[in-house]
Image (cartoon, rainbow, N blue to C red; front, side, top):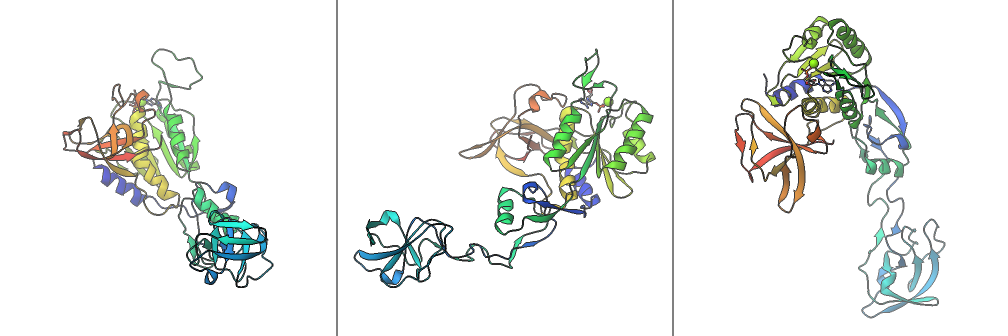
Length: 403
Ligand code: AMP
Ligand code: MG
């Protein structure tokens, strides 16, 4: 049994990022991983423009008492100014419109009084006020976005603004997913006594998709060595990562680990000091593919995904930086119990309070088989191995999850 951090390090060490890329459009970009550094060839802003509706003026014309200006032009957004401002002149200007040459400052219209072709400034702006100068935010040719960034809404906006309508991203990793167990049926079937729905298939697929991977669910496998072997082979042949649930404990029908070895896998991890989810089996196959044999209990299965498969998929995707799940410090109004020789990962809800994050467990039984009270939780609190309990109000580490 190895500690959680060690297991995570072994997994990250074993996985190599994908290198194949594809070129996509802005509409397809959300959540994808940029496969090149991007440099723009436009200054942002492209030209000096007004940040307010008001009047463009020359700041040298301002005096201690209110000054009147002759309004010589109106410049709406999208138009090119036609005139150069001389001393004593102003141009009516609107937010986002180009500054006329000669002007260096904008007076907001609330601080002016307009009469026909003259405008009086009743409150002086500081020189240069309300002008967004060319290149203030970005200079053409400077680094803009970096390879390995996961593109969010703001990044897509930046690519669009810099006229990069097509760009390379790493291809999405594929994750083959299947469940093992004689008792498992589909949600559409009538259940006989002893049978349950294979919910892991859907949970794991949703998990993989949430990280930008392509889930490839395979048919559910009975506790039959031959079918299991064939499915494992098919899974390894068609995906970058394989996840199967069930069959990794010490029961008589738990064949996964032995078959991994028979199929040429090198077992990297057999058991991890975590509750729930101790019997996690990870093997590396020729070509560098990782196979995660995850316990079948529905809570253990998802905890295993969030804690161990998540960093693997992030690194595989070509994403840079931090592959570790996000952790925050929190306190709990409840006393949280440990798991002796293992880290206990307790599922619950992280909320923001006036004094920081607060973690609470949901009501109901906290068994790793209890899928029901896992729903709508958003975090896993960690009671480290060797710690019997964390008293209410004491600080603890909490892993954020997106359910
Ligand atoms: P196993 O890891 O195969 O020993 O299964 C442990 C527990 O998880 C048993 O109670 C199984 O019935 C349950 N289980 C296994 N696989 C699934 C699955 N795919 N969906 C829901 N529950 C499962
Ligand atoms: Mg089973």
